[in-house]
Amino acid sequence: MFIEQQYIEVFEKNQSSVQSHFNFWLEYVLFSWQWWVMVGIFILLWVLFWKLIKIEELPRITIFGLLWIIVASNLDGLGYELGLWGYTYNLSPFLPKSYVFDYCLIPITYMLIFQYFPSGKKFLYSNVVLALGASLVAEPIAEKVGLYTPFNWNILISIPLYIIISYILKFFTEKICQSIR
Image (cartoon, rainbow, N blue to C red):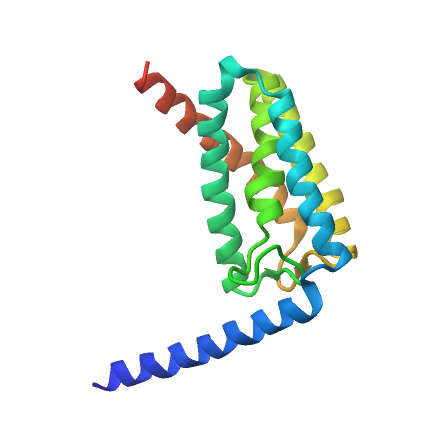
């Protein structure tokens, strides 16, 4: 009985936090210029992706992109829950993660790299350039305009993570594609 009562208290505190976040989102985020920028980026990047994708590569690229979405959104949620970073502005008030990064910017960028530089040194170099750009340029810009707030995170940790994750997901994508041929 004690554990159930403790859980109910934690649940009620969480519901209060969710309601506070929703109220904050309605008052300060929805229809702000940052929110509109995120909506625009989301739409623009997916349209750009469909214009640049080679249709014959679509199944392989889609698997890679979906794996990136799964990993990015879960790691993003974990980082948020651990207090490593947060997002002042997000498209939806119900999840604390940034849909623009997790469901758009990260997977689309990596899908296009995977399409145009699928293996060897080109894949390595493109991943290093992307990791450096994302960590040392994009993250500080997102922080400067208030889209991203690092609390207990060093952006230099992101560099090897992007590269390692990309190779792991490439490996799994290739294994999946081999098994369905």
